[in-house]
Image (cartoon, rainbow, N blue to C red; front, side):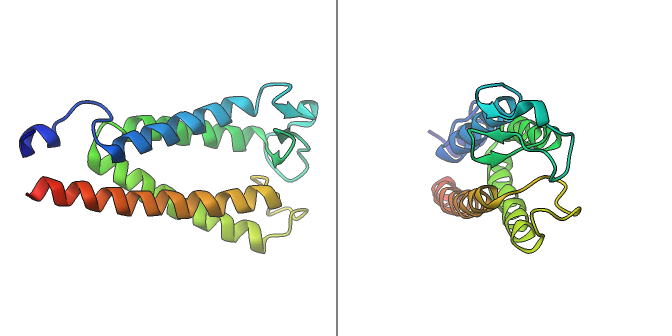
Length: 152
C-alpha cells in the first residue's frame, strides 16, 4: 500500500485506529450500562453528580448521570477519532492523560468530600490508572510504529 493511500485509508484502517475504535465502543457500552438496571445496582439512587450517588455499575464502580454522560461522550469521541491516524493517536494519548489526572484527583479527594463530584471510588481510581497507562502506552507504541512505516 502506498504512503498516500495509507494516509487517506478507510475508517479504522490502522491498528492504532482500531484500538481507538475499540475504546470508543467500550466507553459507549459503559456509559449506556450505567443507566441500565441490573448492570447498575441501586439505580434508584442515581444522582446527577456528587458522591451521594450509590449507583454501582457492575456492583463495583460508583456512577452518576454525569459520570455516564462523560463515558458516552468519550465513546463518541473515540468513534470519531478512529477516522484518522492522528485523531486516534491524540485520542489515546490525551485521553490517557485525562484519565491520569482523574486517577490523581481520585487519590487526593476524599470519597465523601463535596469536591468528589464525578463520583469516584477506589475501584474507579484504579481503573482510571489502568486506562491511563494503557491508552498512553498504546497511543505511543502503535503511533510510533505506524508513523515509521509511513516514512519508508
